[in-house]
Image (cartoon, rainbow, N blue to C red; front, side):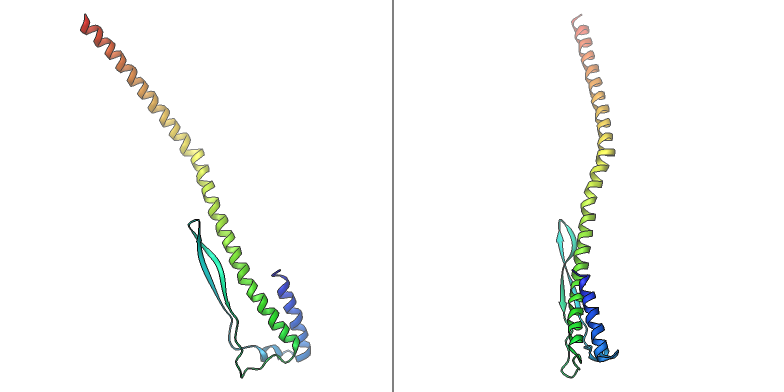
Length: 151
């Protein structure tokens, strides 16, 4: 959808230039500029861009309007394209950030499965073996003490 808007605006601009001359778009452009603000949100503990605040440029009372309807249509089409561009950027950036954040736990789980869990299992097995040997030695000492004390 966004890709169609600049093409449509370009078509209207060419028509307007053909009707009003090359300087017509510059003479009729408002002096004010559009303003774009990005609102941020937090999802799953991650900060990401959530919405766009758009303020259209305001044409002053003394400023000339477009000299033909083609340039008026071009201005409207360019404004629509310029409104769509930051929305697309916000959604794309949010999707990229959330995708990167969702990949991190998978990497952590993989690291746990490949490195930490096997190492901890080996250490647990060594400790269980040492405990078993210690219990066996204790049982031998008790039997030895029982035979020594009774004899």
